[in-house]
Length: 339
Image 1 (cartoon, rainbow, N blue to C red):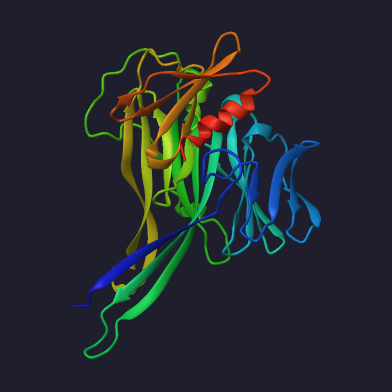
Image 2: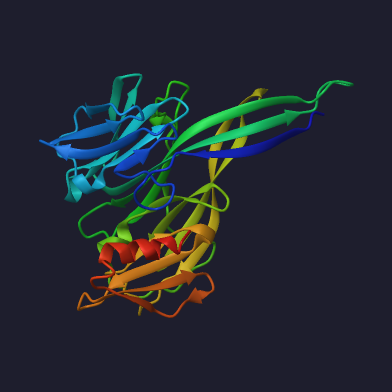
């Protein structure tokens, strides 16, 4: 019997804004090319500033009614393909679309959420390339056979709402890219990020703010593995799940055909507490699955923050704002604590 061993190497496309590893309104490639995405004249425009100093503007087709603060852009460095994600319209008409620029030609846009009568908003995108080195025992007196399997995934997360009265839930999906960079949306299987625990948790009435309806995708810097963070409002918990690539046999009758799949593994579960400023607090996630909440005081003179993990909640700390420390600088300092 042949022994098969897998070794996984994670390759990540990093964005500039937001949680470490997550794509945002700007993306920088390893080659030094910078991409910015914004709305102009009711359409999405990507401004590309290349490493050689040249600049070009790329208009995303069929991008009318895009919500400006929903825009995400990222590049698959394995193929050079560019991807733009956005939310179209608001309220119960909100839906999510993604377009790709492959070898100078736009594909899509694909509407992948919100087309079924539900509302889909607050999208997040992370591009992650999984590379597995597969080692099999060779024939007698022969060296082991080493092959490599590489797959680039578009990790997608968003908030989903079935009606105006529904509080909504976070959803996640992994979409593999084929060798040409085309997203395989037909095989997409969204996962509801709710009721994932094998036991119940007592919940309480909480003041729900829109800030709790923003799932986050990020790379845990110590391991290099992708994760998703979401609020489970039904069970009053913050949920962090590892998105683990694994190799499986694509065809049971042919052990040479293998593919990557994404397995959700429990990372951390943090109970919400009724005295936390849940309606106004902003959340940051980082190394060691550290979770930090920060919020403004009523007078706007300080930024308060505390750390949360499975062991409990720290004491509240504060940064005084003024001429020597702006609000933006204070937020950046707090975000640095998650590294």
